[in-house]
Length: 316
Image (cartoon, rainbow, N blue to C red; front, side, top):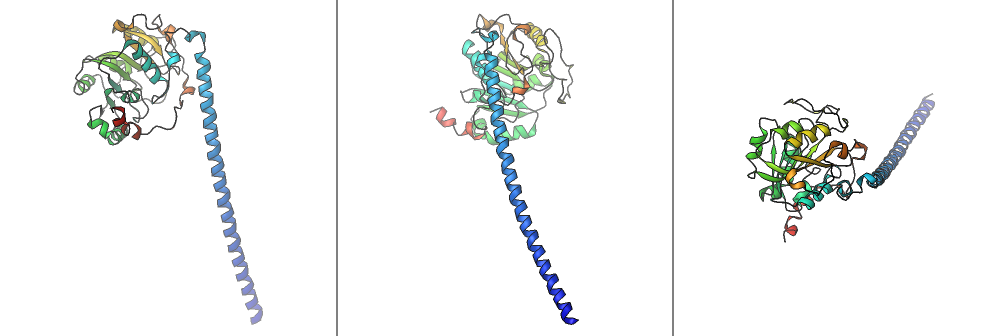
């Protein structure tokens, strides 16, 4: 009996060892399969991104071939992305090619993370300016990574929540010029109200977001709400027709929009001449909401170091 009991114990122990070994082997096989699955998913994710980029570029090229944009005064064919969200960089460059620059000073309200906005590219061309944003993280990141540029007084970056009551004071305490070349506004809500409240500067060009859901001739503008925060719905900004009419009263002409229907471009009337496509109306320049084209790539991902580590060579 004792011998039989010992044999059973030995057999049980052998089974336990065998079971442990099988479990370890299965665990190793599962880990390998999981790793291969992860690699497979990452591979096809990048393939999908490449296909999407190819499609975006092809779709933009197709749109630009429209007869509507063949007039040499149209801005759409000049759209290009360096650091802007879409094709705004190229349009801004073309506007100043036509009207020239004065002091090369900009102000941008709403700067994103500092790597995707309408004025970062201008810093590569010797411009100076002021960035204003309400995000502590964005402003702190900019101040940390662009410390050298800020110390050389090419860029100022301040954190504040912009209102009609404080915008003039904020600008005038940082910008000594009355006339500046460019003002860009993208604060997802009170954009027009803030522009209308500015009296301390006289921008030659204004870039301002519009709400493309409201096609011409609809007059739409959200009521001013000092505490407004965009809720990722259609309650923001103003329609292009509203901006056209009200900017005209301030002495500006609507000269174009970008191809994704995100931003509109206004030039001061005394600078327009015959350089831009008439009539300067929303009906002529409206671009529908093509937000599916947002995400256009412009080479490798942006980094803070690119501007800082090319500063000396750009001035040598």
